[in-house]
Structure formats: C-alpha cells, structure tokens
Length: 127
Image (tube, rainbow, N blue to C red):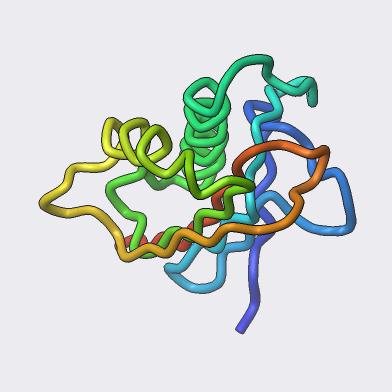
C-alpha cells in the first residue's frame, strides 16, 4: 500500500530520521511529539505547559493531514514521572471529549528526547 509523508511547518521538524506523520490509506500515524515549538525550541514551563505544546503539535500535524483530534483512535503517552499523571490528564482532557476519547496508555520511562517530561504519539483514522 502506498503511503504519504505528512510534514508541516506548524510543528517542530523531526530531530532524527523519521517523519512527523505517515498516512497509509485512511490512517495517519503521528510520531511522538515532545514540547518543542514550531521553530524547534523547547517550551519552558511545567508539565502543564509542556503537555499543551505537545497536543498543539499533534493538532497541527493532524490538520496538515486533513484530520482533527476527533479522528484520533489511539494515543500513547510517555512520561518521565508518573506523579505528573493528574496534570497531564487534566490538559489531555481539555483536548479530547471524555465520551469519545481515543484508546490510550500512559507509560513512565527513564528518559525522553531532549530530557523533556512528556511525549505523545497518536493514530487517527479519516473517512
């Protein structure tokens, strides 16, 4: 099946040999996003600010693919400190409707790229 690389300047450019997202058929696989702004600068602030930036990046990439957060069927959240779960969840809940929220897991990890606190990837399916 042919696939399409999704790239937007509204989210940070990849910092390695990967794409922001790949569209295969009606499915878009968005690479893990960390709290970098579109210019590639790390967003200062606490876990709340970092989580907002990550979700803004996901939104920008999905928009470039012609989709929205409403099309997301699965998210994976990687966090440096599971003690931040409540704060992450509060921000996450402001982007996703609880009644239609995607499937998800949250995993504590030892380290993330650029020593950030949170990384989120997602899978979305369009019509």
